[in-house]
Length: 434
Image (cartoon, rainbow, N blue to C red; front, side, top):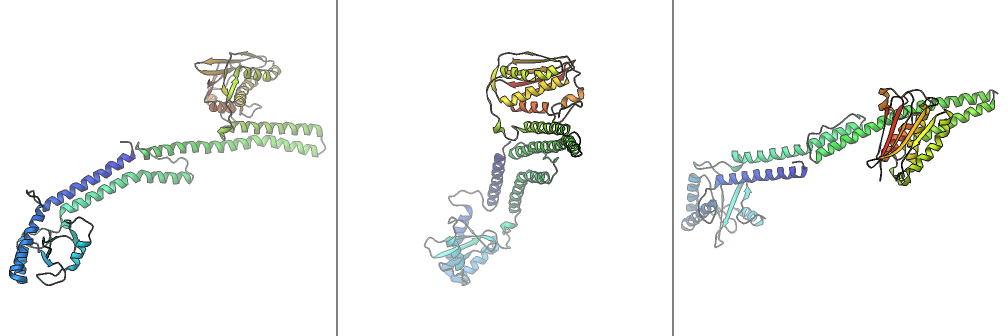
């Protein structure tokens, strides 16, 4: 049973069933299984009523007292006979408050009331002249029974209801309390805090959702801290060189050379900021992504043309093969991804070597493959190539190009993988064609 609703329902029904069974069992202790239209206790009470009435009408108060004494001695109970105003016909005492309680009750006519801690039953004569009150658990006589709230059966009833209710409350609230403690500790800074999931109902699903959220928050917080450290490290060098260039210009050196250096460092900082914006684009605001139908073949052709100058500077050739492909995509994100991977291949390609780029379609997916013929990367570095600011070897870049490409593929519900091709590095970008 996985649903908390049905668990609560079944527990409640079980409590009612056990309680109802206990009530029936207790009632059976005071009644016997006899035939007749009226319950045994009511028939016995009617007999007592007639005998007490007869004793009073034939012999007065003294005869009634003797009759009640005899009943108390034999049965262990002492009925009470009054007139309609509530006067005790045996002792003359005023019992009208008992009649008023019976007349004000909201329960059915035959139901008893609780008087002096005991259930008290009442019966009005058919001619409306007398009231008879009697309790089924009074007195020390040989046939007497103990009070109903002292019987083991009643104690069982109270204990069973109490235990079942307690277990139900504990079963429902214990995991909620554990989750509350975990949330408080997590909110206080313990990002490793998780909730042990031992059930599959709504509470267990809530705990699992909290654990998934905590995993995500922990990753985001650690990534943010690492990103801030990386940014501070990357900004320190160009800012330091900017300061040196300004100082050289102030000291009367070559002002043009100092300004050129300031320009280069400013361009470097601008490139870094632009790269960081691309890293976070779409994740911070998914609505900023604009999918539209685009000619991917034409887009790749334009990227190859834009990067050919960089390739010629290293005497490299870009060999490009493609197929006609039109699909929905964010053109700017896709352009950034492919261009960053291609420029990365050119940067790491040896002088005069070939760089290959292939656009293909496989089983409903578009694939762009870029391969260089350089030294490749160490195997231990492959899993980290797409991390922001990671560089397998010192280069002039910031280590953001492949990270931007990975985020672009994720926003296109695609993948990007890198592998050593022997020689060189092969990077594949894939995303679904729609």
